[in-house]
Length: 383
Image (cartoon, rainbow, N blue to C red; front, top):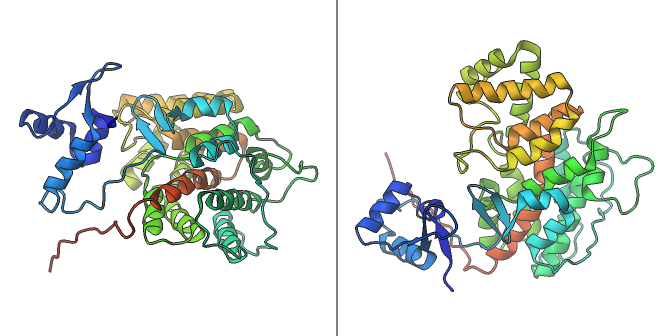
């Protein structure tokens, strides 16, 4: 049976506005059918691919890289990311991050080894630098790093996830040998003489595990298309995620909350708009009516905030809404979780990086099934 896409997915697939999509229908270039479950229309993926193929090379699609068909994650505007058809918001409430990763990798629920390899002592002090170091060393110490069989890639991803987790900070004296990734991260991110609930960290990891063709995921798929080994491909993803507009966005939202607590919500938001032209933690390129991951994660962060901080977060949200600023996204909830528990300002990016290894590995495996070297952008020369 052909796959049917929602109106929003079809428009994104073609790289056009919804109004343009319906113009194609009115001109007879596409056919649609009524969506029986919600308002809107459904479009056949094969028809969309055929239209894209006919227009390829023309002005409209001159800069298309490739059409990527994926079964890993679907973005639903109301429910958020669906991992292999299962809503991430529901999985975050009841599933371990490790089990969600195995779902993305389609290992059949294998109880794999999530133990970090012994990498020695790292002299680097910045958390993200230590994570890069750990990923590189994982590859350097793997004698069969080029093994791209699915079971081997899953094994590699577990190894990397554990290594990135363990270099975040020192292990507590009584850490269980088989502690979960969430529990290990909680212990390493917790401030002195405090605790960070592993359940909240686990939910954050699940919600951030994948987000379809995010920029860092595309970087991994490009590396996979030239048949880079899993370590190099995931390093490409980690490098892309490091940017302040991607994995580092939650740190900017964290700084916004710190400033709001010191100076007030309005001065802090005004300062951010003056300095960057945008409000950190608000707006999303996909979720125009609100990021479904935000309420799921904020509900876990709120009990960890004091009354004053909880009220400040809601004041910030209300202030943004009153001035038509786009709705809050998961970066604000992630920042609230880090800020409210005393975790370091860059904790959001740390959680993001560990979580996204799961999605990147799934996309890496999927891309190996496509023809190599298929990503080639068109350049328009301008003297």
